[in-house]
Image 1 (cartoon, rainbow, N blue to C red):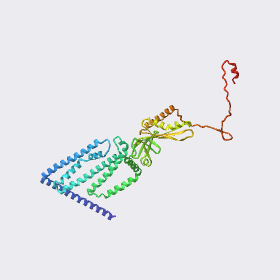
Image 2: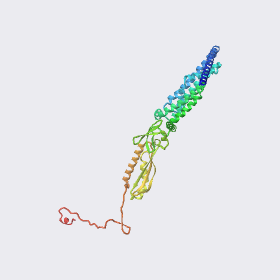
Image 3: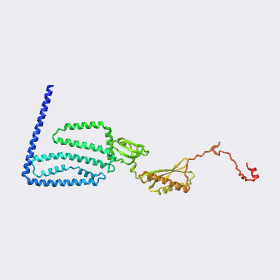
Image 4: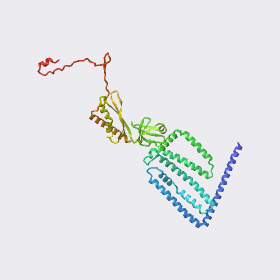
Length: 410
């Protein structure tokens, strides 16, 4: 027990001594850096002035480039595209980073002391790491929004999903940046990297269901099978997409209720996006009575074609007689309505039906309805009338005041 305590005390003392040595070395290096910098500034004042002027010009040029890039965001803010992504990256470029970059460029040509160049390079590395993390975050988020095709009006459709994506991207990028900065500062990051890996695995296992729906939301963003406001048909449900969230998508059914479906479950079955139709096909079945003349039946297809194409946005696909029904001559009319709006389609179908009814009534073409004829068979199997033959004799009608007629009346 005492040996263990002594070892711990020895290790602590060794660590303290090592830290003291590093602190002393850092102090010595700092004093040497200041001394060499002051001496360089005093002995090369003209060269330093020229380098400073060049540095200011470089800084202003870089600042002008970033300002011009930032203007792209304002000009293309209505929708996220590649141009606006470049503008967002420029907008997120820090002034401090531009200053450090300008100093590093100038010192490469100003014959600066070695320690000063090393110090500027060290600061530039840290600044570049942080600035790169900001750039990567903006590029990734901008690309996600670009693939989603989001406008300012559409951002609410995937607001929660994009919020969690922004959080995950930010945590990932800046975690890597922190590890890189600490490594440049001389910190042992092996344990930190291992801890981040184990923590990520634990979080992934604990939130497996959430991440499944999250990745489904990402699939919706990148693949864009549907968007908010689209009319869809899924699993015997027809309605309009009201919201696309992190875990669920909400569909307002035609019957009025709101159907909430998990994103992963939504993508596992076939979905029909009715909003992307450029036309809708309508099929009408008509039945004519069996005593329709042959020449009239032969003219029906051309007649139906003329009637249908007389209605706006309607185009006949095929029409003709399809068979003999139990009580009708069956015809079928198929036509397309060139509209994605179902209300227009419904109105066009109604107009076609009414036009057919008017034309057929005007021409005396009769629609069939279910009928049934009963025949009575005799002993020999031939049809006979269900009543005996009776000869009807017309009787004169009696007139008021006519006695002879009254006597003859039954």
